[in-house]
Image (tube, rainbow, N blue to C red; front, side, top):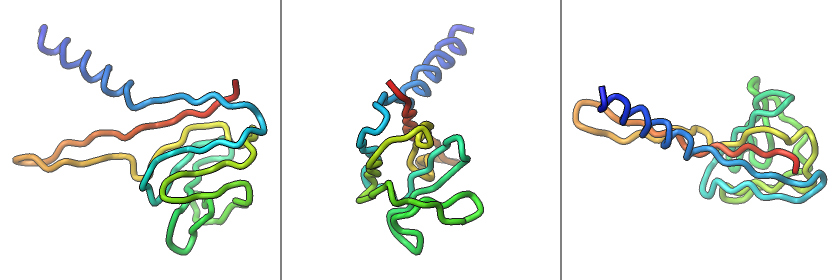
Length: 122
C-alpha cells in the first residue's frame, strides 16, 4: 500500500511540474517560448488553434478545421511565438504540439507530457 501511495505522490508532483502560469498586462507584448517547436497549440475562448512555424500555414494560426485565422498580431521564429499586443482573445493555455514525448523501453515505451503554459491577466 505504501508503494502505491508513493507512486501516486510522484505522479502528482511530476504532472504538476509540467504546468506554468504567466501573468501579463492587457496590451503588453509577450513571448511564448517553446524553443524548436514547429507548431504551438493554444486553447482560447474561440476554440483550439495551431500556430505554424513552417509549411504552407507558416506564420499563421489555423483552427481545427484547417481554416486560417487572422494572425497579424503574431510573429513566430524557431518555436518562439510573439504576441505583439496581448488581448482578452489571447487568454488561455499554450503548449508545443504534439505535446507528448515517447521514449522506447524494452517491451514498449514510456510517455511524458510536455509543458503547458497558462497565460492570464495580472
